Amino acid sequence: MLVRLPCRTYLVPEPDIGSGADGDNVFDVIIIAGILLAVFVTPDAWDVPVVIGAVLVEIAETTFWWRISRRGHPKVGMETMVGLPGVVTEACRPIGRVKVRGEPWRASSQNGADPGDRVTVRGWVGLTLLVEPDDEGSAHRHTEHQTVGR
Image 1 (cartoon, one colour):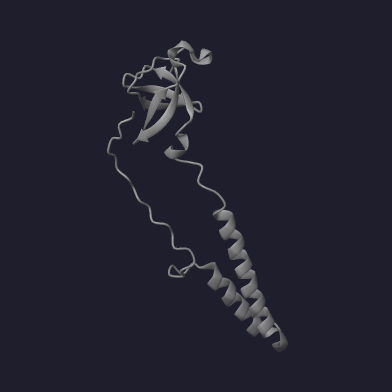
Image 2 (cartoon, helix red, strand yellow):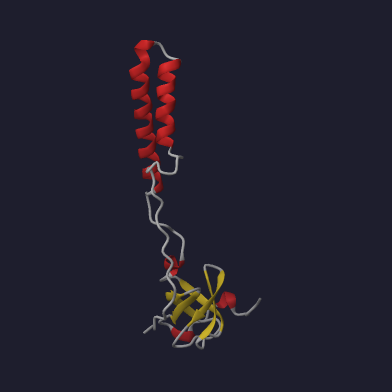
């Protein structure tokens, strides 16, 4: 059983895409360019088709980039580490260090773990990982990382 310690939560508002309030809206720029092109460059018969074409290009481009930017969940952050295996490099009684994905992390384990033990990340508090020893316990040591270094 892991104890959840209180920690700060930072909420970052999502950007308001497409509001036009900041003046950098690409949609406005392409439509204005299409209108200027229709009025000053193209023959009179092409005014409306050029503006309609600019609108269609902008709608297609906006749809394309919107889908690309929202096609999957973020693959970064502490929440992606939950469930990953790790190896203890400094005894966790209760605070120590582990390596997860080859990176050293500060870790806390209520059950305790010795260097070389395999652990699983169960959560986090701040930048400290909450880990539990694997089911095999300390009998099966990780042979590649027997030396505690750095």
